[in-house]
Image (tube, rainbow, N blue to C red; front, side, top):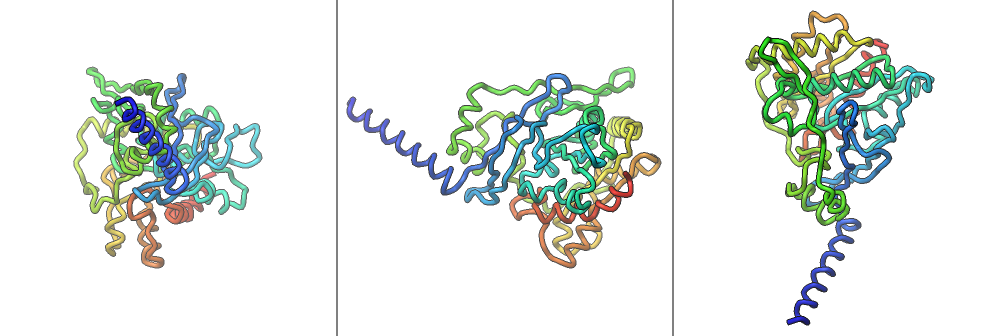
Length: 353
């Protein structure tokens, strides 16, 4: 019996070692940085000065390079305050679309905008998965204090308004939200502290476990280490109608957040994504995400906020190139999608600084 157990253990260890080599060399399993949270600001980003390869799907496609700079963001650039820069700086703030794990570092929006400016303007990217309008505001305020940008650009997506309201699910997204108090006043609610088991960093060193969790989407490890919990979702075929009803609490909170954006010390530009499946089917007026359309209407009376809808640019590019803006497996912009967005917004950004 003892000999049998030794053979079984030896076989399991050998199999595990073979799988480890295979999922590092043959099919490189997704690598990702560990999420961290600043104890003072409550802002979540990543363990600094790390790097790796992001792959997706059972065949480990993509294999995009990522790099977490010393400031904790996925970017080719290191970030400096105004006294250490020679160029004006534009801060780009958004969620996992801006975070950029679905494209190589050199194809990120910040890099493409920097190249369009011929190196005359710096673009710093602050993207974090799961963020919404309330989190964008907190990041914007912190970025202004740390880096003194000349312009704030906020990338909007689906549910950014509704998702900013504090609720029972807010503790799961590690973002600031806004709560309505009984007396009708509003307050920012900080996220719960980001914690995870001490075993998780050790377990995530295993390429086999990473492959099972992320490439095969088997969610059995804590979420705190995951780049994007929606990373294996496909492009939705439709979206919520842009005339969707918004309850009074959402209207109140969104107006409050937009007032805060308008009072920032630098101009603000909102850039709104939208459903792309209708574009691929040939629609010339694909509509907008409900939250984006709602925010756009509320921005009309605000002088310090400009709004850019990406839909017409996507429609025009699709008619000319018939090149998708993301992989077929996921709606996050790839390198080509980033280039379309960068070209669409570049001139407005330059005119605003």
